[in-house]
Image 1 (cartoon, rainbow, N blue to C red):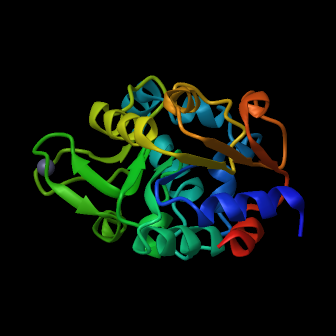
Image 2: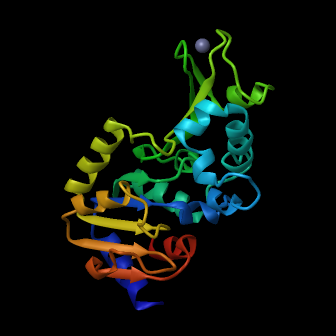
Length: 236
Ligand code: ZN
């Protein structure tokens, strides 16, 4: 076994205060592509379409893009999601902080999950506040989903130009401050402010699992350049 993986396995074995921080790479092994790869197929780039002002001005184009490129109803949790859920059940993992919006951690059975960029699983009417599950949201046949009151139903996903949710940030920061081991996976840690949250971690071991280098590599105690699912199958 790769010696860095061996090292992480020992660290995981000896701690019951682990936190996981994940990004898009965690979900690619479940068949969810990075929405940025949809670039080129559209007149506007994905980050423009997924901005608050574009959503307000062109809800039809926004929802066409959103439904096609951000919702994958058949996606299933992979080994990384499943192992993390088991680690939480075994009282070793305190929680998960994710940049993903696909709700696959909850599908795998994880409970303490902080979704920095929101979730496709929750939607609310902008006018009356009524809640819609993903199923209810998808049942609405018009391109722009309308509530029974006539308001637009907006996914609880943080769009560009929008602020991250205060309670979610607060929860994530508390988790990081108290953690003994932080495993970061499937993210190049380039998207702020999410990535900068890592700075709140002050525990014993920082492990990074990513195929490419990150700005935090120099601070890491363990660096693993392997696929995340495979790595998790070996460490726990
Ligand atoms: Zn409504």
